[in-house]
Length: 319
Image 1 (tube, rainbow, N blue to C red):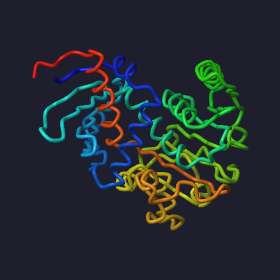
Image 2: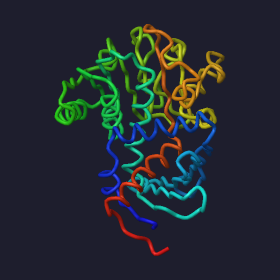
Image 3: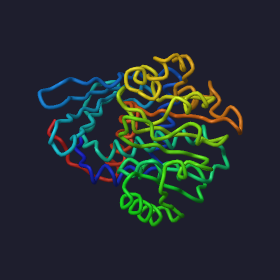
C-alpha cells in the first residue's frame, strides 16, 4: 500500500530519539557498504533552484529521493520525499518533507554527538535560533545529560523567545547571551546553525574537550566557523565526503588556503561502524560538519511509513 503523509502526520510519527536510532542503523549499513548516496544537485531555474538528492539502503530494503524548489518570493521550499521498495521498485510512500528534514537534520547532529562528545558533556552553547536550532538542541539533549544551555543570536528578542520556549520544552535552564563568545565559553557541546556567510564561531573560543556540530552551512559561499576552529579539531567528521567537497564552505575555504586536506576528514559511517574512534581523547576538540544527505531522509521516511501502516495513518494513493 502506497501512502501519502502530510507534515503534521510525519511530525507525529517521528520522535527525535527514534529518528536518531534509525540514522544510527542507516550509517551502520553505510559502514558495511550496503548503501549508495547521490549528493544534492542544484538545477538553476529562472527565479531560483531545483534541488534533488537520492539514496539507497539495501540493509533497510528501501531507496528514495527528496526534491524541492527554492524560488525567490515563494514563501519557502515545499519538500517532498519519495520512498520505494529496494527489491521491487514499488512506491511505498510520498510524504511532505519539511518537518522530516528539520527532525532528521537534528538527529544527525545528535548521532554525531552520541559518538563524538564526552560522555560527561553537560553544557551546550547554541548559536542560532531558527527552527533548525530547536531540533539540533533537542537531539543533543536526547543523547547527553544536559544541565545548562546558553544561546545567542543577533536579535535579542529572538534569543529570549528561544530560551523561554526551549526551557519549557526540555525542562532545563536555557540562558540567552549577549554575545557569541560568552555563549561558546565553557560549553562542552557547541551547536552552530545559521545562514552566515562569514564565521560566527571562532576557534580560539573553544575549550579543550569540546564537540562542535556545524549544521547550517550547505553551500560553498557559507561559513559558520573560522579556520582556527578547523585547525584545532583533532577529529573532523562529515556526513558524506563527496557532498562535503561540493557544499562545505567551512572546509572548502581552509582547503583552498592549504590549512586543511580532505584526507583529514572522516565520514560519519566510519565513526558509527567503529572504524574510526569518535573521541580521540578527553581533551580533543571534535567537529561534525553536517550537509544533510538523502540517506538520512530515507531512513527517517522509512520509519514514518512503517509506523503509519501500523497505526492506520495517511491517505492511500491510487496506485
